[in-house]
Length: 199
Image (cartoon, rainbow, N blue to C red; front, side):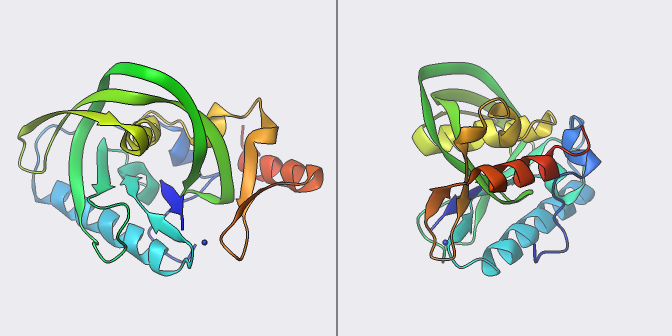
């Protein structure tokens, strides 16, 4: 998931890549290969961010580097680009949705140039494991809750664009000055044709 502040990274895949529509597999044993995947995910996220003036890479799912495993990384500090560290969530699962459904802008490292106003619950309860296999349980609220819903969707082959596919007026773009603005009808038609062309 990206956040506007506004594909160089060779490790990232983008729509309409087929893998993004597939469900990821549960991680059984956490070995060195899993830790290598995590390193690749962190590197790909930071390389992408370094190529963008107005955006921050706040989280990534393994499928976005074409690895179909249920692994998600989430940045430790969304507001500080100098903090380039992440927390690891293996086999993350939302066990409870709570609070209100709120519409806010989302972007994605695997959806080129588009943002969208997506409805999400503003509170969720998560279970997962860390990179050492320790069980994690947490309640996420606000933007963090949105991040988890976005990334766990990825592990199920769902992207934010799918959540608003029937509401094309919700799609936006990020300008060169880092502002989010609505797409024109022609821009919207072209963008939607590109991201849904394989469906």
